[in-house]
Image 1 (cartoon, rainbow, N blue to C red):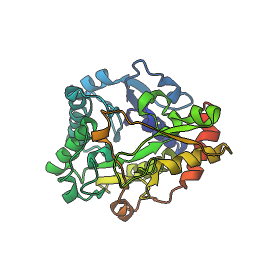
Image 2: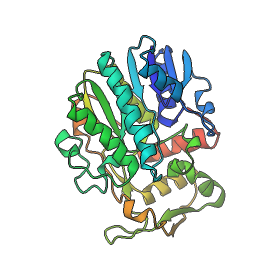
Image 3: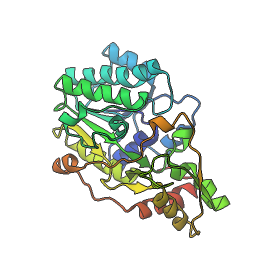
Image 4: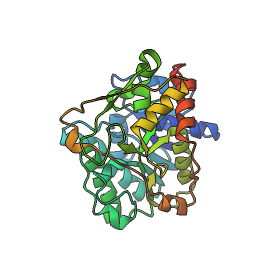
Length: 321
């Protein structure tokens, strides 16, 4: 049996769909539904059982898991704006460490989600080589909790027994429950489709004009292909970037959104909230050499094609993947 934590969430449910498409259905889905309407992400998916996160953690600690062939750990707190350090440590770092240790003790391949948030302001670049990882200074508690787990993997010599993926700006269907953590494409869809205008944050440094702050946007359909490659090749251990390797500005993303709906672009620049300004990343771009060298499929759809597919085939129809 495969264990998939966060299986009702954004990336987890899309990977569940990928596993099903490959004929894999013997899967234990772990998640915490809470008040978010995640259940829609599990509709039309095949899996053996569902277990709430707290019950699952007890099963791990008591060594009562079913016979397991793989653990894919996507479950964690995905908010980047909370200030409760204890919450991040418990729900991201400690949860991951307990599950990772069980995997290593039982010789079960362990694939987990790290994050580009570990790179902080990008002062040390976006290189996923181990020697660079030790230098990183994340800007928020979300990034720090992910970084701590990456360091735990490296410091204990577990990088050859696990695969960590530093997700950059992933967008696509099944993120509808994420509230403020939804991608701009999802969050601003109504603005573009109904009002014909989109609001983007102003820039507060001279190097970037308003809306020209850049991110490495990767479509979820491309992301799950790389995930599946590492799932099928667990011997390719290490911590890897998962982006496209090509940054695009928010203005480019906005223009792609208007083009998808055959509308003329209209962009308004608004003030960024004060609390975000000191923690804001102005540029992210994955260095993909290590991921390429591992043999992962790194041929990606264009930003324009990805945005069009998402908006026309999913957002307009209210569909999940």
